[in-house]
Amino acid sequence: MPNSPLPFDPIERAAALWEERVGPSGAMAAVTSVMRVQQILQSAVDGALRPHGLTFARYEALVLLGFSRRGSLPMRVMGERLQLHPTSVTNIVDRLEADGLVKRIPHPSDRRTTLVEITEVGGHVREAATVAVSAMNLGLKGLTERQTQQLSELLTKIRRAAGDFAD
Image 1 (tube, rainbow, N blue to C red):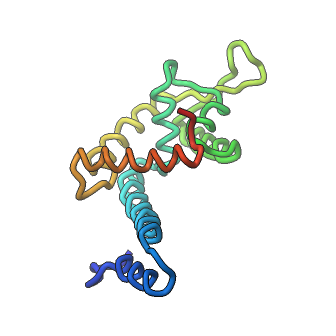
Image 2 (image 1 turned 90 degrees about the vertical axis):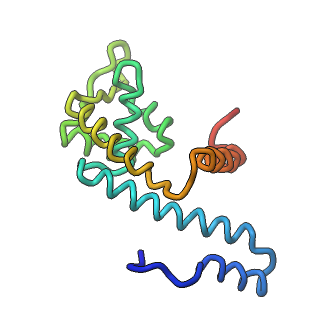
């Protein structure tokens, strides 16, 4: 990230060149902007979570467990809900468990299934991290509440069209 803002919008400039040399530039400018905003948001959220010893993926897992009725979920369900490969879920759970934020427990009725349960310490870390990311609006500077809602609606259309979820 540059130390000072550029004197021009590089995406706007790239779009103008794209328009001259390739053709319509609307999709290119939109996608490039989304990619840049993802970097900005990731940096902001990581900065808020770092003091709590969390990455966004680890934070998401703690939030998911906190939202579950019993504070625990099968690892397979965590992967589905977080939309992650089983190996990624295992790595996240390994790190959270090493830090004492979750623990693996046997499923009460299915011996083949392992549950992941948030610990009391994990609940406290999740709460403190949530205060931190909420205080900086998860990095969404410059948008009103309505604009944030509109952004979510537009991105949901893309996710739906890509088959991210069923209606």
